[in-house]
Image 1 (tube, rainbow, N blue to C red):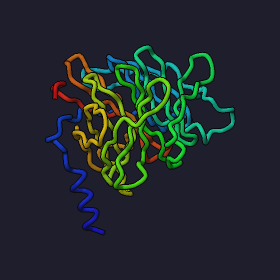
Image 2: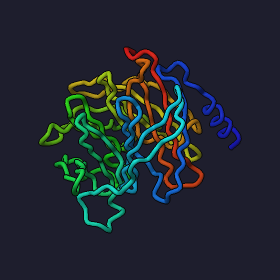
Image 3: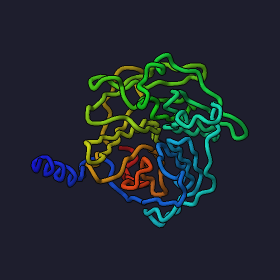
Length: 289
C-alpha cells in the first residue's frame, strides 16, 4: 500500500514539461445554485470571452469570462436554464447532456447519454433530433456520445466515452447533413476514456481524455490531423498527473491576441462537495506546431 501511494505521489509531481502545451492557469468557479455544477462540455467564442456550457442535468449556461492578462478573474452568467429537449417533461434521467458544438452561424448542437442522440437546439421551441447512426443503439448506457465537435465546413463529429473494449479504438462518426458515417478511428489507451473534443483554429481535432485510478483524476489532450480513414494515434499536447486538476470533461480550443493556441477546459464536479467546478487553461506558444 505504501509503495502504491508513493508511486501515485511521484506521478502527481511529474510536470510533462516536454509536451507542446504548457499550463497557464486555473479558476475555481463557485455559484450558490443547486443546479450549478456537473459541467460536461464547454464552448468559448473566438476571443475567449463568451462561454456556453452544458451539464449532465440537461442545463445550458451562457455567460462571459472576465480576464486580467492570462488569468481568469470571474465569470458573469447571462442565462442558465434547462435545455428544451425533444422529450416530454418529467424524464430527468434522460437529460444527460455530454457534448456541445456551436456552428459558425451560432447553431448549437448537444449530444446525450441516457437516450443516445444528438440534438439541434432551437431558440424558440423544442430541439430537433438528428438521425442516428445504427451503432448508437449498442453504446454502453453511461458511456455513449460524450464528445461533439464541428469543423470549419460545418460537419459534426461525435465520439463515445468507451469503445467497447480496452484494445478497441474509438470510432469517430461524421454527420454530412443527412446521416452519420465512420470517418476514422483513434487509438485507445487503457488508462484513459474519451470525454471531450473540439476543432482548433488550425483545423485539427483536439481530444480531451480522462483517467481515474480510484483516488484522483488525470487528464491529457491529443491532437489529430484529419485523415480520410484508418486509425490514428495523434500527438499528446499535455498529460496532467493525478490531482493536478479536477474531473476535466469539456474542451474549447481558440487563438488569443498573442497568436497562441489556448486549450480551455471545464471540470464536472459530479455535484460532489469534495470536487470543484474548475476552468483550466493550457497554451501552445507556437500555433504552427
